[in-house]
Image 1 (cartoon, rainbow, N blue to C red):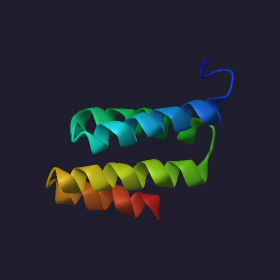
Image 2 (cartoon, rainbow, N blue to C red):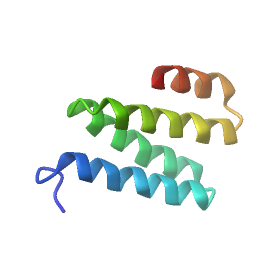
Image 3 (cartoon, rainbow, N blue to C red):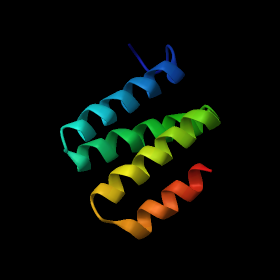
Image 4 (tube, helix red, strand yellow):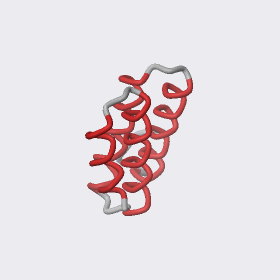
Amino acid sequence: MEKEEDPKRYSGVLHQLGLLYEAKEKFDDAIEYYRQSLAMREEIKDLHGKAQSLGQIGNVLTKKKQYKEAIENIHKAT
């Protein structure tokens, strides 16, 4: 699937990859996929998807004990 064909679905795939890496505790990779998804969701003005990505980034940062940055991302999601 090309991102130009269906950017909303493509951003969802990137988000799912983030979830998979998060489950494997590969947190840096998870954050990278969440950020890619977030960028696409901002571009297409998908507010619900943007909130999901920011929330997941916050969750991963919490797991990495980067609490200040985690709180910032979670606040952006609300």
